[in-house]
Length: 193
Image (cartoon, rainbow, N blue to C red; front, side, top):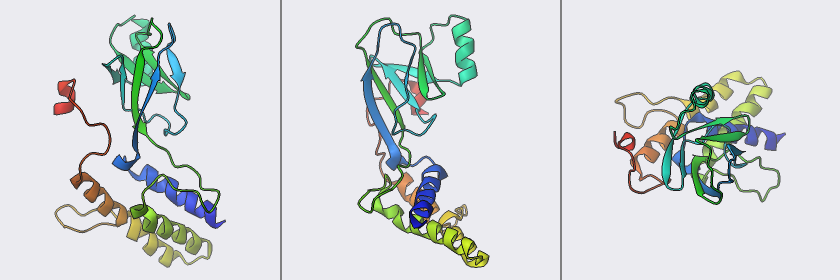
């Protein structure tokens, strides 16, 4: 039961916001005339936010927009995620071209005592407090559960330094630190705004 509460808390924290510490880049290769590829197992569903094929940037669009582009036989470089796959348009005609994708890692369920969470240790207190809130809720100690949950999830008050719960403070600290994901040259002015 305790492990289930910890896993639920970890999942909730991973979904709280787009954490830079969960960003990850992967590489694979194209297959000739293949439009769609399996979504990486370690990524959250629909979390790929940047994609390149052979060093050329593709723009993320919704599934409906992708279908529209495809129907119009557009040559715009676009991609989308749908039903456990990511789709690329125009379809690569050559095999072995490099596909680079950036996405967000998902929470990996902790099963054994030796398992390591995907979140770094600074998130441990938040995970434990949310699991404790669940435990208190089960014991019908609603006020204490609300206090624990608030200590973790309280939003930051604009203009009030140090306000908010643990996650708000971690978010502020993360924004102040350098980017931990992709670092490189901007290939599009879209990233420079």
